[in-house]
Each structure stands twice: as structure tokens, then as C-alpha cells.
Image (cartoon, rainbow, N blue to C red; front, top):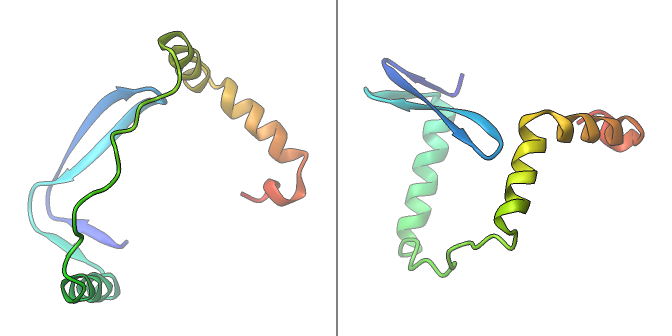
Amino acid sequence: MLVRSSEATRRRRDGPSGRIVEVMATRSLHLDPALQEAVERARETLDEAGGLGEATAERYESPLADQEREAVARILRDGTYRRLADAVAADDDELADL
């Protein structure tokens, strides 16, 4: 396990792709030593580079209309998308192992 928390809270919410479980640590985190070392190296590199700078990305606006978004959400919720994706993957050797 890469991250272990002495205490956590769970929260469920419904999103467009179904139920999402969010877990948030409420006490100290204990990182795997190799992960902790990688995090520290990344922080040092970021500091040396002067930080992240300003965000340049604009807010994402979906090109889909409300009805289209609902249709996508419905096929994600009811399993249609998963069944079709599995069928496509089964017919393609490169995708079958994913």
C-alpha cells in the first residue's frame, strides 16, 4: 500500500458516471518510503524551477447539450457502455489484456 491513514472519512456522491466514493484522510498520512522520497524530490525540483506559475488552462465547457450529457450518463450508469467496450476489447488482441 502506498498511502496509509490512521483515520479517514468516506463520502459518496453521484456523478455522471455513477456513484463515486471519496476518501479523505483526517489524520496524519504515512507514505511508503519510496513514494515519500519521490514526493520530496518532486517538491525540490518544483521549488528550484520557481513553482508552478499561473494556470493557463481555461475552464472546460462541454460541447454536449443537456440531453446529450444525460444520454451519456445513462449509458454509463446502466452498464451499456461497459458491455460495448468489453465487446470491442474482446475482438482486439491488443485491447483484450487491458
